[in-house]
Length: 430
Image 1 (cartoon, rainbow, N blue to C red):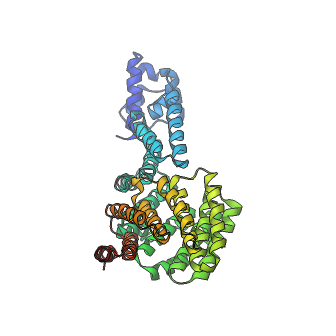
Image 2 (image 1 turned 90 degrees about the horizontal axis):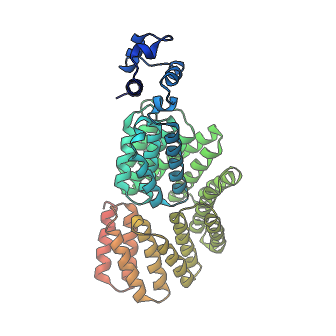
Image 3 (image 1 turned 90 degrees about the vertical axis):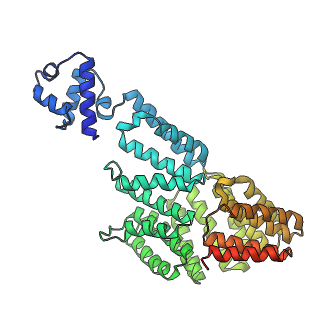
């Protein structure tokens, strides 16, 4: 049923509740035949006519247009704002609950734009909770709805989130297909900030899939698009992800130049949480490219962690920074300090973020082993293995199984180490 039909039905319902005929409602400004056409959904009333009918029916214009009273609209907008705040503040379970309650509210039926906004927020909250399959279902419906209420920017955001969820789920072909259909289809759109961010997500899918040549080519195109646009948002997205591509393809110094450019632009124009994220990426890239500067990288990570803690960063952001700090301390020869950071990261996460929790437990197992605490290392390794078994096979899980195999070898568990190596090869598609 179209919004035009719904408006006509509401006018008819309220008219009957008021005990008016079509002729009485119409007189003297309108004809009764025109009112009949409006009520049957065959004519779309102008804004002026709707305002007139609202006055004659003694009801709010908001109700005729959206099916809710002004008070109900205020409550819905407030509920949506609280859900969005919970999501931004990293309270993902609370955000999921609030969005679900909104979507169960029948009043949203006549508010397609608000419903789309709530569904998109719900998908992001579900993704943050680790339920990628449900997030993919919701985002796929949003993308395919074809509803005019979805603005172009929101459509791009939906596709971006869908591609990211497919990537994290290990469905790399779907992640690439979704991104390429939006960016590189027969009617290729002109670049804007949102499309550059979508392209950055596509870059990461290329990397995880192992398509490094394509990633390298597309990264150059993305940086050129950002330069053409000249916007801080596009520049940060393009340079940040192009830096990751450069490092993966053996161009370490180029990677550092790109991430430093992203950091400089974000420092001048961005909000604090994203600034801390870019700073974290710059530190971990420097740690890999220039291992001799591990102490300086560690200090940058400490600054980023402090910045994250002062913002609305999620526990996932903080746990990732804990993980990076543990890596830095291991490179500095401080396994006990690495254990401290890795434990803190594990404690921040639950099994809804199984992949990251597995990675953090593996780091903890490695740090414990280096600290000569073999029994504790073995226990953490077993917990990481259990988590990895629940995560879909991908190159990331393959790397996890390779780490398991190495640590098992150090623990002289040779047979189990061979099994883990086989799982690593299977995850890499070999």
